[in-house]
Image (tube, rainbow, N blue to C red; front, side, top):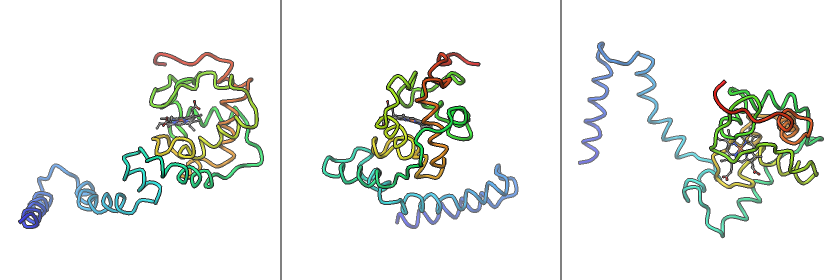
Length: 190
Ligand code: HEC
């Protein structure tokens, strides 16, 4: 019975879409007709780690945690130098079409930051030890290595930034002479 209803619904949708006075452009009609399949594929063919996050609604049980974290750590590729050029890193951090870090994090002297993630204001106060550089690099390369299933993009794993670009962003956050640490964080609209 449910199948018949679905078929009837699908059929009437096609009839509606086929009409010339449709509110949708022909390109939109085509998208509507294929979106279902693609949406299904994106959900059904998730990578193993994403599937685990989906299964547990982003809260992994403790017995799955250490294996998950280890696997995420193993995905990280490190460059020769963990800290690159902070000026280049600033351009990446503050570019909405590139890393877009400020949309989720407060602390940029250029853009008023969001609060989806924790504030990174004057991040360089943590110091510049090897351990802090490695931690910062790792979080940006693959946030899931420290925050399983978080919404923060996994910039290295997803191929959004190269290891060198991530090293530039690390320098922007950590270098004591970087604008990020010497200038006040932007507030209010520009
Ligand atoms: C979509 C939102 C989002 C974007 C974009 C984003 N982050 Fe994050 N970030 C988060 C969240 C959320 C957390 C905290 C993780 C958690 O608790 O689940 C976080 C955590 C962090 C941390 C660890 C914070 C700490 O106090 O140790 C650092 C460092 C960081 N992000 C840097 C960056 C940088 C650099 C970029 C851009 C290259 C970036 N983030 C882009 C959401 C985001």
